[in-house]
Image 1: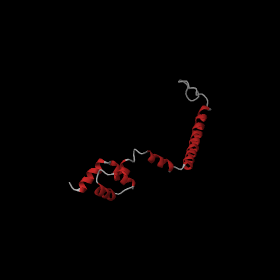
Image 2: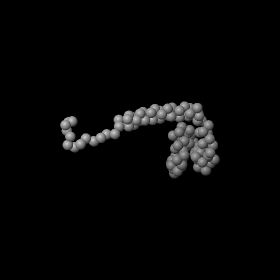
Image 3: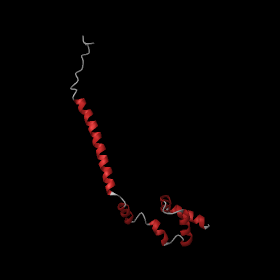
Image 4: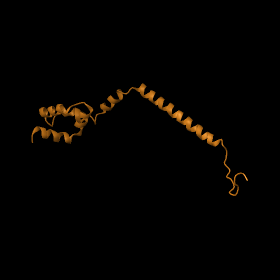
Length: 112
């Protein structure tokens, strides 16, 4: 089996590499060069394989969140929900103010 086929098999067994390429962190060419130089059992792959188990990845994501922006979006959503509640509240109140409906007698036609 040549290097190219061996790398394809290696990539199929490690879906972390696919997610790295899709996210734009690496290219297939770069990954193949790492494979060609270092092989399968190298510490060079640790940056791609240990990402999911690492708590620092989560903290990095949390650092990049702008809390002011999140607060603005929450306030906007609360205002929208308040408007919807007002609209639905008024429609139910108007139905209640009409009063009880009394059914017409069966034998009475056109105000006889």
